[in-house]
Amino acid sequence: MASVVVVGAQWGDEGKGKITDFLAARADLVVRYQGGNNAGHTVVADGKEFKLHLIPSGILYPEKMCLVGNGVVLDPAVFLQEIDRLTEQGISTANLRISPRTQVIMPYHRKLDLCEEKRRGAGKIGTTGRGIGPAYVDKAARVGIRVCELIDPPAFAQRLQAVLKDKNELLEKYYGESGFDYQALYDEYVAYGRRLAPFVADVSVIIDEALQAGRHVLFEGAQGTLLDVDHGTYPYVTSSYPVAAGACHGSGVGPTRIDRVIGVAKAYVTRVGEGPFPTELCDATGEYLRQKGHEFGTTTGRPRRCGWFDAVIARYAVRINGLSSLAITKLDVLTGLDTLRLCVGYEYRGQIIRDLPATLTQLAECKPVYEELPGWQEDIGTVRRYEDLPANARRYLERIVELCGVPVCIIGVGPGREQTLVLQELF
Ligand code: IMP
Figure 1 (cartoon, rainbow, N blue to C red):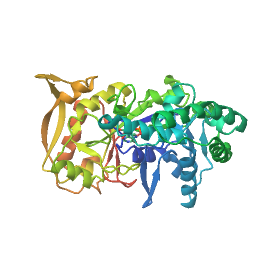
Figure 2 (figure 1 turned 90 degrees about the vertical axis):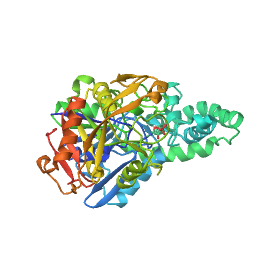
Figure 3 (figure 1 turned 120 degrees about the vertical axis):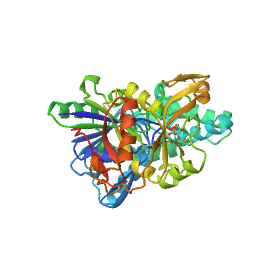
Figure 4 (figure 1 turned 180 degrees about the vertical axis):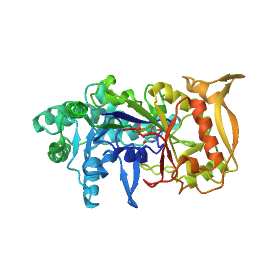
């Protein structure tokens, strides 16, 4: 048996969807452990494109069990739409389960997310506006509504009555917005609860039984290490724990049960939303990466900021997540550039630093220290063995391995499932 966690090693959008989809083929269970529909995976299977926000990518394999853990915040309307869309595309959701402890995103969370961003003005975080932050705030404030309450009308009525009065007061009196009508909200959400009920099961128990039976479990992280609420570039972060430890917390599995952690990193770096980004390219090369890599958000469509690969960040991800190896995605996007740059450290007030600073003011002052490497012109989309990559592409990857101190296990050379080079078997 093996349990493998897949985490984003940068600011999200590293191509985890493709890697988890690829690894899901070898797993028996796929578990989503944090975040919500702020995430977006695009998976290309048999030439068909699937966009998933909440449902684990393993859903494309009919025999896999797909689990949504307690660490997720679930928008029932979005979740049910995703189920309907998959059903229309001929994909079965019979093996999908949700933890009863999963928190529910309510419409007031979405509205508060937008109001809070507006109030922040120039200091906005650039959230996805999906209600993620306010839902996690309510969880910690102990006024959240969980899936087990949503599917139990009397319990739901009690929770909603208790919380809606305060939310409406906040919306109406503080933000000058309209509140929500209790009965309309209750009726709409009870109907969602009825549809969700057959999917609800104790995810922690299912995983435990599977591990005891020697089955393979894949934990699928959303967002990335630098968006983690504790370890990311706070406050420009999401409100959950995308790091590997989040897999344990967000699904009810102890840390001794995890065998391997794979960090997914793009061959360059992107981020959406605000906040410092030392290797950002605000020039023609940045635009080249954006266009060639189709760097526009899956969830919001926003153009992503693009920059050179940053080994300071990658090493940080290795340490914080205890990475066993790296999966490098979108290597093909770098094809055609004459010279590539790798950030090997930061210069901060005349000194070279190798570790990510905690404060954003420090990070904003950090200037990347680059090494230059020659690029390659050959199309690598059809390459299937590491040895067949152009020598300069291998040199680039080998330097990343040296800088990060962990091996590369998988390399992506295009969006298709078959455009994946495996250097190490993981299950
Ligand atoms: P929130 O998660 O919607 O609260 O947004 C907080 C920050 O995380 C913003 O900078 C978002 O752009 C970023 N973010 C959230 N989800 C993703 C993702 O899946 N990929 C990349 N960035 C994300």
